[in-house]
Image (cartoon, rainbow, N blue to C red; front, side):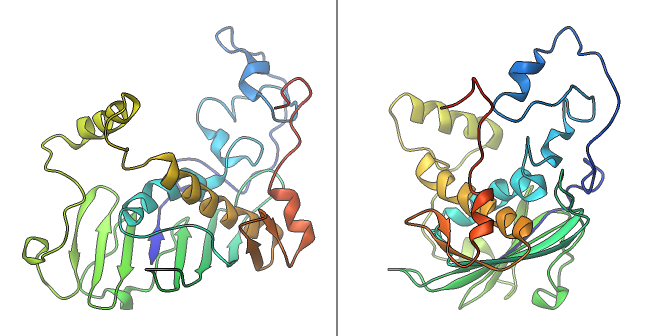
Length: 257
């Protein structure tokens, strides 16, 4: 499986050092509340309201921003959790922010009902080799799922195609999603109905939690600078003790849980 995004790109900058200068805190912002559990630092418009996602203290870079969105589709048919190994490469990473572009690979082992597979992530303009799906150009954000019988290409905004040329409606596959005229409204209703005790949400915590862990492990490997081997049961890296410092963080005094 391959996923890619054009973030950060024109949306926000990464590969940055800590901004300097003294800036007054706007009256509408409670800065102490905004930075929450992270180490104290003075207000700077470089963080708020949008670019915070680039900084390790506040966000998790392009993959943390977009990874869960793109993997959500794959999670409808695959059990995406507990990788065994992760290796990352990129350029532009600093002590303060994520890289300007990266390529991360996760190895998922065999488990009941699902064979071992690799998941590739690309950001900052990197994409999979066009040879994997030569008949269609890759959009700015997308997912490529390579199966035993066919290969599916789909985009962040929906739609997509099969390498074989077959039409989706001609495939006798189980319907996971119901018919819906307004997908935005269906997305909201899915969440509200689950809150009210109805059908489990498509992106329930049972799915979203493990996917988030997978995404964040990519950043652990990126920051560690080496391939990491992951012990999911004990929530620790087994081959690089220094990498475990990125698994959790010390909360600022007064914000401990």
